[in-house]
Amino acid sequence: MLEKIMEANVILWIMGAIIAIGVLGKFITVVTLGKLVRASGEMGKSTHKLMKLVKAKFEHTIMVSEKVENIHAFVEKYIFEYRVCGLHLHTWRYLEKQSIWFCGVAGCIGAFLSYRLGGVQEEMFRYTALAGVGMVVLFLVYISTDESYQMDTIQVYMVDYLQNICAPRYQKQQALQMQRMEEMMKEPEEIKESEEVQEQEIKETVEEEVKAAEEVEETSMEQAEIRQEEIKEEKEEKKVSQEVILREILEEFLA
Image (cartoon, rainbow, N blue to C red; front, side, top):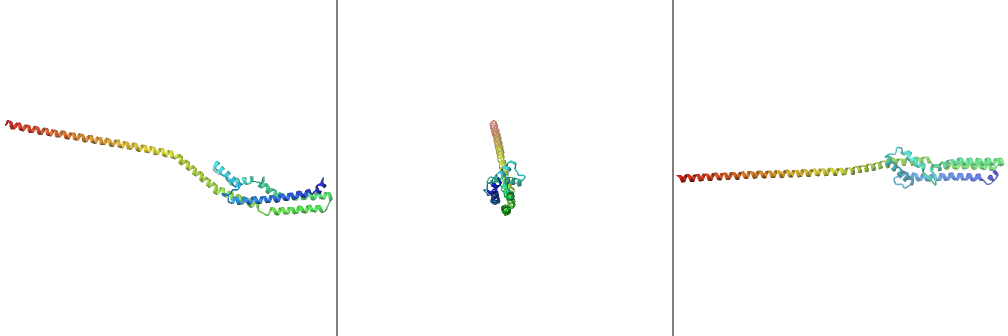
């Protein structure tokens, strides 16, 4: 069984697959992080699905609880859950790192099996050399970019946008909505108060008109009474003058 495995170079194929997985993980990680850095730098305008998801969830959380207590944890949660090609981003980074050790282990297993079957021979040294070269290549690929710095940059950009731009803007919108609602609630009260004021003014106007009419009526009645008294006095004066004339006539006649 072991001879067939060694003759078919199964260990070599496994080492090649491990190296390919490590390089693929590095490629996917680099491309994904590059896109995320660019998208997080312009988070307000970005159409990236992670940025859109985080903004939507953040706005929903603010709408429900009015405040996000720990924005860093909020951002880390969605970055941790972000998937690329069916796997989480941190899984690709894990495969990229662990492929170095898997390659070394596979090379050691191949060298051990080769030694067990044929002793110290060229094939054993070949497995050892391939394992060493594979580990060096994967290590160089792993350190070719600073992924931790990119992850920190993404989080800083996202937290900065959510904390300093998105949250104040949404709070301002909520304040405006509350103000509009208060104004809408005050409008019926103001209308009612204005109607009451108008009714009071109408009542006062009517009362003033009634008083003015009563005063005019009283004045006219007083003038009529004065006129009647004047007429009566004139009649009495005429009557007195007639009596005087008659008396004078009688006195002249008797004389």
